[in-house]
Image (cartoon, rainbow, N blue to C red):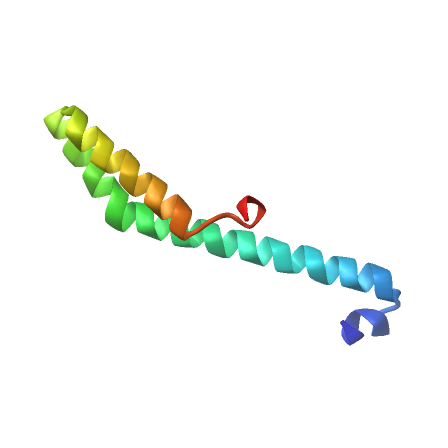
Length: 78
């Protein structure tokens, strides 16, 4: 933050910029974690459901998606 102040930003503006950048980084991290989990865990289950076409496979896939969302909540979901 002292770098921002050195560039002429006042304390309030510098804090707001840091907070905004921190929030954006947290959101990007959560989205990336979800994406990786979907690809490795949920997507194969989705393909099984599409192949089998059973209600049970659909429920398993939807439960996995919900579990991933709970494991990696978006910052505004907290």
